[in-house]
Length: 369
Image (tube, rainbow, N blue to C red; front, top):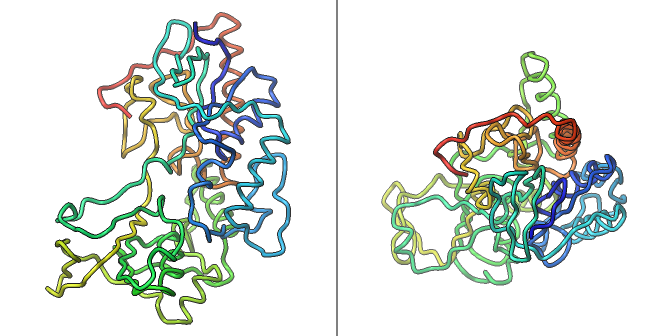
């Protein structure tokens, strides 16, 4: 028999923990199911030298500020340590490792099926992020290339690249930071779709979050959003990137035409030998577990009602995946708004159930998540 519970939160990273914080404050019976072996979420899988581009006070979850650090920008290990201590501080009931196989309709809620049993929940929060769903564009001839291909999700350090010819593909912060350190030990070429946008040296994640928040408030209030000076995808000049600029390597080429067996061919017909391609091309929402719900998908994401609640399944909320479920929701500090609103919405939903008011019927479409 499945374990009956009010809420199941799927994912124990920053989005799951932020949601759990507000569910705990509301005294809701909930559990967090996490498929990782320890605390830290996706941060456990980032490259070794990664640093945030926001100071600690602008990289914190609700309720407890990340301790100030002398180095300025927290490292991946410091973020992992903070998330582990956050989990302990608030006694968040995380069960791990638990792999959620599916979420499906049941008579009295949603049935969450895992490799360690089943839970029957009145409501489900999906907070699985994107790290387990890396995206690699389908370049012509990619299957013919005999060199090594890795996504930034698998990249760890530049030591494995020493002396090789490397393509770093992708114009965001991950591409810039990986290029900066790889170029110190190998012949690295940076490939971006457009000319990269570099922010002023004094702009960091705090400024970007403030701008994203101002834009969100303007749209919420029906006003014209302010003209952005920088977006969350623009490149922040953290110290390693500034150092790469000094060395003159922070330049990029437009995309090549196709792969061949040992490299790539550019639009001018020239050929470059390549040993390794590092794809810094982003991620997609990790939502395979929601397939049985047959949610309608628009622009690659399930439809929501303007917040985090699914338009096609009244008992499902999606937190922390990106702009489509809240401004800056994929960041440590930005996820708070969506997590708080989700918990408040779930409280009202559970009260309606207890009052005998059935959840609104929402029909699903033919396209699955």
